[in-house]
Image (cartoon, rainbow, N blue to C red; front, top):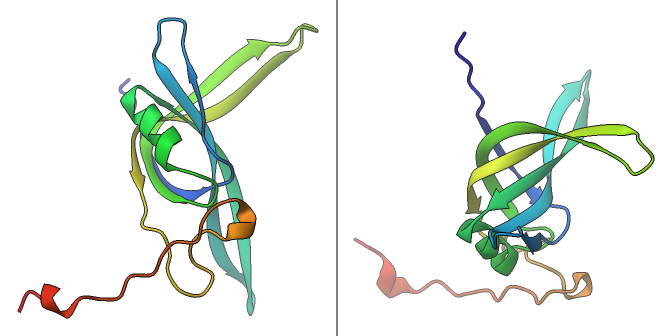
Length: 137
């Protein structure tokens, strides 16, 4: 039987990416994204949040570690994978994660509530005034 494993998600990072290297020197980045789902229950709007772990390999892992931080929006295109291991106490554990084949960075939000606040450990994104000479018509 033929199978198909493809995941496309859009969400925001819940923490800064963690970049490590395999023994052979391959960069690996791990981060978690929050994907929101809004729905109506009767007359009331409700939000449901799903937290998903993402792993990225190679040059793209280094790029994610360099340019992404908590709160940034991304689109992740990859495949779902189950990872299994045993703890030191002998307990079997498993978790699902997305192995990203492509991570696209979303533009930073501008205006009310946009950008990274200085209290969150980053610098606020500078607002740029539109240049009228750039109009293509």
